[in-house]
Figure 1 (cartoon, rainbow, N blue to C red):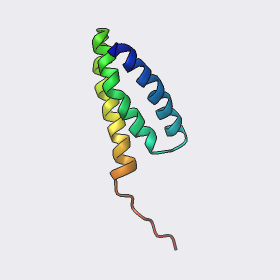
Figure 2: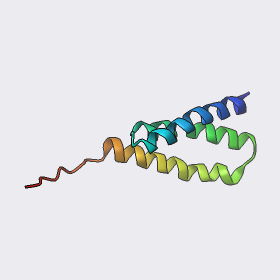
Figure 3: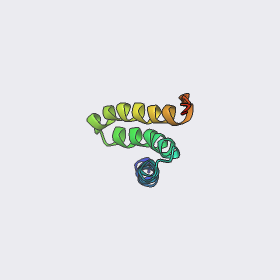
Length: 80
């Protein structure tokens, strides 16, 4: 049951995250980050260990995107 739920969430939010990132919308990074727990669940259940450990890198990348788009101070460049 958890595997089916995880894969459904990955499908919906995974596609949405890619679409939003392609449109340069910062919420795509949030959607991508929301999929990560479900990736961990489904790879753990199915004993897909290389992908399970790769998810740590994916999670770090989504966190970096959230940081860049939501929290990093943007310097304002004054043009004459």
